[in-house]
Every structure is written in structure tokens, then in C-alpha cells.
Length: 355
Image (cartoon, rainbow, N blue to C red; front, side, top):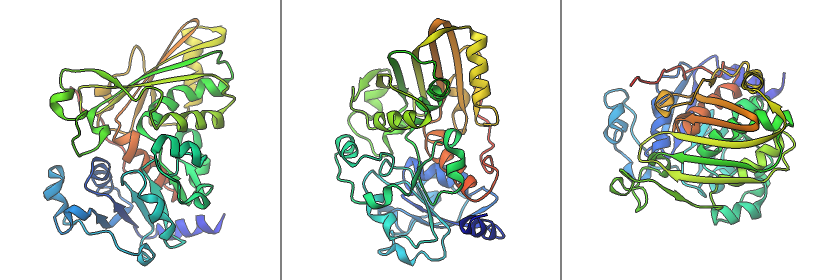
């Protein structure tokens, strides 16, 4: 057993002391909702500079009366966080680059932004329009798609939590890439609810713009595209062309991805179903369903529902997630659980609603 694992197990003689940076946004709100009721965590710090001094329940009305926590300004020097075990960063892209290098060496970090997802700093700059200022830390980050990177997550110091579109897409494609049966172009047609754009309204996310409307955005330029391609190459041999297109749904939560593939051999529905069930055997949060997934079934949960269909060499894979839970905060907590030797389901068993 490594020194880090020993430290993790010793820490669990008491609750993990957790800090959340960026607690006022949707990702931070979901981290609070989950971690407040996690049996092995104690939230000791939650920051939100613009809401400093306010009660968490005053800002997040769904948590009113459930916690006495108040938002605090971010400390000027993160080296002072000596009594914290793990920090979640739910901040806009670019901010964790300067903050994570300040952490004490024993503190683990899970970053929900895109700052450490992409290995190549030039590709990062192209898609995020930012210079990567912490390239020396990049190789210390593990890409936190739990179901495909579970063993690496267990021993990680730092986690780059996947993007929401990337999570839905990668979980849909990973079994086929691993099988080596893909042939030709892969087309991903993905759609998201408005919460994926954050808590602050913008012209393209404002309710009157999205309600009763439907449109595409960021053709060939979405920032999740390079992390999808990068991780598919880590999962298996992926020489295929990927066409990745994103669309705006007139709903608050949920991502639905339709993936169109061709294979080198004819596959029946039974063949493709068995392939996916075998790949996700032991992955509690991935459910192989019949027909089509529905974002209502996964809303407010950490599940990813996948359906697969075959027409000989033509395959379609559908996946659905809650963009704020499995696509962000839930997967981050799932990764934290593994990092500290807990069952990855801890604190994450909640069913969706019906209807």
C-alpha cells in the first residue's frame, strides 16, 4: 500500500474535510447538495466572493434550513489550507490554473473546469482561448472519467473532471473503441439543457431565447471535442474521424447524445448489447436500457443510461445524463470516493423522479 493510500485510510477515521471553491454556481450548488449529506465528508469552507457573508441557504433556496454554512471569500494564500483534505474547484475556466499550484502538498484536488483536461497546451489555447500557466502540473492530473479510468483515479492526487458533453459521449463510445470494431467516421449529435451554460444568464442561454426553440452552436469548435478525442485514444485504437456537434435544448437539465457508427463486421442487437453490458459490468452508474434513454429518468441522479441498436454494420448509441450530476458534481464525488478508498456509490444513491 502506498503512503498516499495509507494517509487516505487514516483520514477516514474521521470525516474528510472538504473545501469548495466556487460554491454559488450550479456546479457548486450540486456539490453542496451531495456533500452535505455524504456520510464521510464535512464541508469546512465554501467560497463565493460576490456572496461572501451570505448563508448558503439564502443563495441556494433548495438548501434553505439544511445547513448553517456561509459563503466566504477565497483565501489569498491557499497554502494556509493545512486542515483540508480535498478541494473541489467549481470555478470558471482559467482560475484553477493559478490556484491549484498553491495547495499544500497533502491536499488533493478535483477540478470541474477544463483547465487540466487537455495534455497539449497549444490545443488547450486553441479551444479555451487561454494560455496554460501550469504545464508542470499537467502530468500529475488524472482524467476522471470514472468508468474507464477507475484504477488511475484511486491513486490520484489531482483529478481533471470531464466535461458534461464529454462524459455522455465517451461513455457511449468507449466500449466500441475498446472492441477495435469501429470503421470509418463517428458522428456525435449531442444536445444539452440551459444549466450547462452556468448560473449567469447570457444572450444565448436566457430563458426567452431557449424556450420553445432549438439551435446548434460551436460547430467544430466546442471545447469538449479535444478531450473526447484525447481520451478515446487512451481507451483504444481510435484513428477514426469524429464529427461532434452540439445543440441547445429548451430544458434546464440533461444531455442526450446520439452517436452514429460503422463497424468492420455485422453485429446483431444481442451482440452489441452484450458488448456494452460486459464493458460496464461492475459499473453501477451506467445502465444499459432498451429503446431509448430519457433525460427525465436520469435527472438529478449520477446515472448514465445507454441504449444500443444495430443494423448490420450500422450502429447507433444513445446516452443520457444529468449534466450537473454525472456530468459534473456527481462524477467529482464519485472520483473523491475512489481516491479515499470508499465505495464509489457512497453519498450518490438517489433515484430520479417520475414524472
